[in-house]
Length: 256
Ligand code: ADP
Ligand code: MG
Image (cartoon, rainbow, N blue to C red; front, side):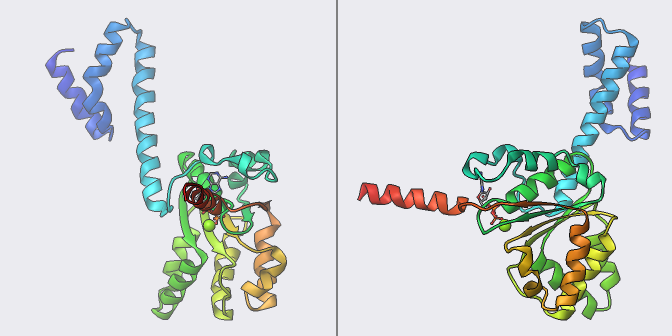
């Protein structure tokens, strides 16, 4: 490729907003020469590589904005440690069709069984598929909404929890809410109802729902909207955190 053409292509792709192509055009033409590629194959190569770079950039930017606590995947989840949990149920969720349907997913179980791990893994998969994600604990969400309400900025702050395609609400049930706090949760849940998915982790059974959301009527209203379209996965098994701790303690006592 002569220098004049090369420069003109670099300027044009810059204007088209394809910075990666501006850097790699020489590499692509060299590969095309080597492989004696035809024009359609060359164009296909350039466009698909550019799209892959753009998707990857969007994915990494999405992860940064998501506030996910880590980026663990389902491959890192050892299903053999939870024999009562049917892997197919989780893998079904990982197809993300519930997000397409604007339905919810709830992961129930005691501490350490991997509820947050699975919720995050689903969120990472959704982010890769192009959905926007926001992760929060219930506690942080309520605290932020209360502070915003006190400062007269509630509508603005609600947007943080209403805009993303998927809202992950972690650690529901650890703490009892007052009526005003439960009302803020109701606003999020009712405004997202049939508009955007919620993935939540919950460390109690649904029958204890009323205790968390102080007021029974409000609790029922929240539960009603959350569960109308919701995949529920209960994980009843041992804590993975304790497994590692107990093995370490056993090793120490073996040595002693
Ligand atoms: P929970 O939210 O249910 O309290 P977490 O998802 O925080 O539990 O899991 C606790 C830790 O144990 C995390 O580091 C998580 O990655 C890990 N973990 C839990 N269950 C498994 C599992 N079955 N296989 C691999 N790692 C697991
Ligand atoms: Mg957790």
